[in-house]
Length: 191
Ligand code: HEM
Image (cartoon, rainbow, N blue to C red; front, side, top):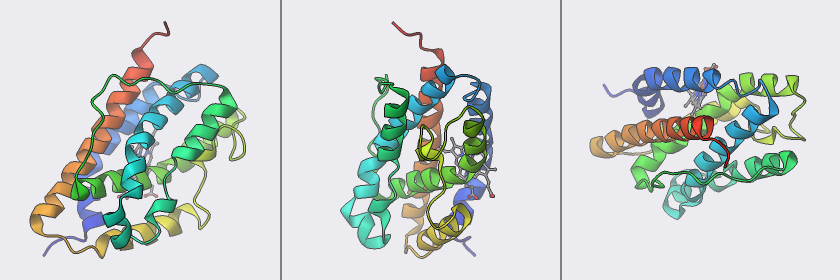
């Protein structure tokens, strides 16, 4: 029998997640304000790609409340707090189809779980949900409650086998895009 979509996405992405997690930690995002600024620039590039996905009309009909979940605005406020600009990403901006977009959403919403750990680290360098680390704050319903509700919405989508495969591919693409932007912000020198 088919696993629920959220379980299939988790199983499919486990190794990739752990690679991204290691990569993010290796850039030591909370070791200095400069490193945290780079991390924010990567988050900004990621959430810019996600914004139209969260606003997609067809997906909003299938996933209730989707358009309220984009975190681009919070990332922008964090960048304002730190007085930093977005970085021009030397990447083709992905434009996933509707079903690949589901995998992007899985990746983005799930990243809010790991954000609990990152938020604690951010607090150690004085960034909080009101200054500099808004985008890492918990959803108002609580991280776990929101995540369970979101997964339930994913699991209730009726997808063909092919569409499900596209969702898995979308998750791969999302993780790998994030990985590439982290590498870029980390290794690109300021002009
Ligand atoms: C240093 C960076 C990261 C750490 C330490 C971290 C840690 C974690 C942890 C501990 C969980 C599991 C929470 C739980 O089940 O209670 C989790 C889940 C998840 N994280 Fe990360 N994470 C990191 C970065 C990311 C990034 C950058 C992304 C995506 C761009 C991401 C996507 C996800 C997803 C999709 C899940 C949900 C897995 C599931 O299906 O249960 N994480 N993360």
